[in-house]
Image (tube, rainbow, N blue to C red; front, side, top):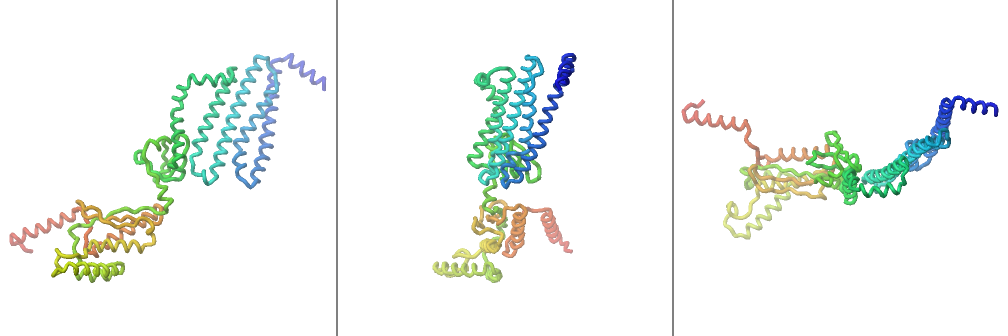
Length: 421
């Protein structure tokens, strides 16, 4: 055995370059073998062990990415144990290997931060919080300190000396990390005031944003719009621009329906006996009409007027008032309308388009498709029932109206000229 060792030593002395190559190859082979043992054997057993446990936290913390980065440290430490070059070259190699070790430690720490963030987000209290923003700030700090440390290793300067020297270039750093600092402050404000969470439906008209929040990071917010496109904008834009968060509507469980139907003012009139008898046949407003008639009769009798039928005297029932009451009763009968939230059928100020009758209610669902179906169904019925109260929906003249008007004028001209067909 000694003879073999002596023979190898003599061969390396006779062939120094080949000897160094063989040594390097042997060291690299040994490093690879240790890496393979750690990665393929040790990490495999650790992965199997954590998967058997009941908790998921160890699965997240000891994930494959972190364990793989840990396994890279072992071959670097193995290589550091061998000295095959002269002192000057060995110093360079040791410096490079030390820098690599620090770099691996930075990657491991960043991986642990990501894992801890994922673990914290498993709790219901922090599920929708923008924790990723804070994690990214911590990772930036760790990476910055690590880069300074690596620079100190490569240049041979002390870490604290380099760190203290950063004060001289703080203005430059503030300029470089300006966006990061602003985004971090915005993230704090968003979390403190609970402005948005992942899953919230937000609307930012200025940016053309209208959709659900998919992700909130330090620098960007990702939104899936309702047209299935994805928008990304800076986190600080949530503070700089006004936006609407629909979370309150989703938490309430009801979505507002706020729409008006415009009544032609010329069709509004008092209810005569014939109309009254017809209206009484409508089950939803029969009780209302009985009470209203009794109330009006009592009021009018106190006026001691000779004729309460005179339009200028007393109180009368109107078709538009009866129509409003019908809408109230109709909407109360619907199971898809929430009566515990604001429930209102009101007149708005008349304008060029007629008298607006506004429906201000809440549907019992926040689902978009169902909400639109409920809203459409309600106004389908309203539009169809308007003529039953001898009212007309206001509509600007169409080409059909002008054609009819021209026919009337043509007929009048023919009559005036004695051309009756």
